[in-house]
Length: 367
Image (tube, rainbow, N blue to C red; front, side):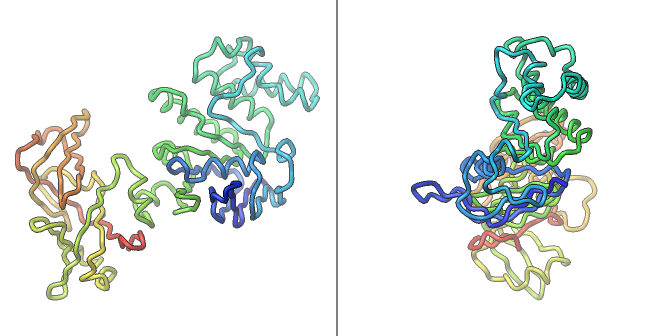
């Protein structure tokens, strides 16, 4: 078993700056978990503490049920893939991939067998005699992954491995990494600041902010059911629309008012949940861009039309992003290109309130 467990993990630097502030996390055997968050949130520091490259201030790290706080990195049976590949320039691909096995003095035929098998998985058999300078960025990243896989470790650690690649290659390598994990079912912890990478790769996503864990869950759960204002705004591209609002009650029914001319009826099934917050003037209204669309011939329950004046439109081919302001806040809708929405021309959009969120601005909690 290669379960990784963090208990009250703390990291403070010499000036008492807290980088990680007492986090708890259980990563299951063979699970692919992604730590995601903005720069400075503590995700890379957490990964480096798991690897043993960073001393911990307090708490415990367990790998396979054993506390490894004082175990040197080389004895933790983990393999790490770095952002900068960290390949030896004077060695061939085969020599780079086999380096760790040769240090362990494994038999030559066993080394050759492992390297050949992993090279086949990664599609780099024809590159084994080349040196790193003869490879593209994507090929170098495959070699770095191969060097980790051949060791057959308990845990793989990835530290923003795709950051140096161009956009198209990053998309391709995301797919390759997911394929490799499906073939080589090893516990994997992956760090990135890119929430699209997190959503597409992970079994579970850990959203970090300011040294703390904001929420842990499956990608779809975080997207559709964010627990906090930070998660709601961080997960999703374009980001969720979030603006101030007032919750009003009239004759037992609730309406959420964004400004003097835009207000929506709260779906009846949410009335009981939200009623206690009627009159609260510190609420935020959240709705994702795909739930703000052009008008359609047939509307469903809780889909409400409203008028806006688009300020900017961005044709994307399969959709058009429409930007407008409500309550002084820029918002974004996803419209069908056939709707022909034009900047400066008053138009009607449709809000799907089945997917609305109300957020307590003071606590940052999604209600």
